[in-house]
Length: 279
Image 1: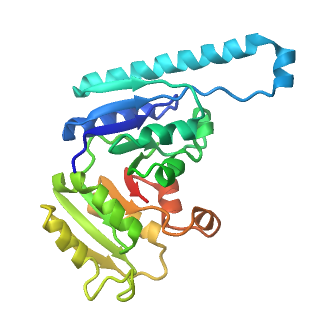
Image 2: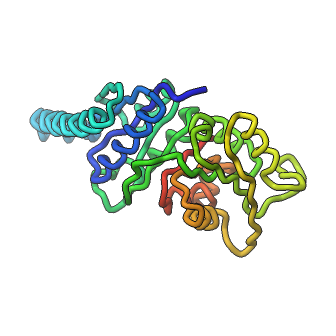
Image 3: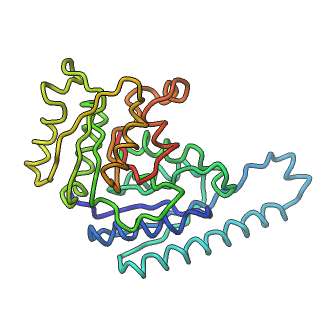
């Protein structure tokens, strides 16, 4: 498998330019076509309210959406021309989450932005990354709202827990892992037995599998029962100088993670480098 179609979510947030630059650089590195998707959403206003306010409100909403789409396209064109990649811009009208998932299903990889509660322009995107990860059937790369990421995939950390979700994420990430200088396969507090067991040397089997695909993979594991997996992954990613984390998402239900916490929830809320997730 190779990356031929990359979809990037374009919005009006303050962080969109950095996300577009990262997606364009990724497309250039893999020779992929980059599609920018801006969803023109209009707030739902009850009919009895519209009857009092008149058609001017709807017209104003459409003008605002059109202006936002024009600005988004200018940012997208600037990033893709600078990177020299084949590109297409789409600005359909519709409900944000469902439209994102629909277009994502026809791409090899989706690039989305981390939700920033302090940015009013991302008010409708609180569950955008979650929704695409869970419902699109495609891998999703989430770019942090803080920082710039001109290089993604030189030094990669794979969060390996021998689960179905992690297996899917590793397989989806193969095009990136093959091009990486080094891939650290990290198992946190591994179990040796059972269906999600790691064997005598945690991470060794998946590292050997990756090596047969031409990946320079190194198996590592850490035991720290007093530190949760999410914090440990981010800490080790910093120590190793990783510019990308690859991991499975929501090994248990999303609701349970929201209530009890979990690695996926923690990473999505505290990421410091781009994270590629599969479910």
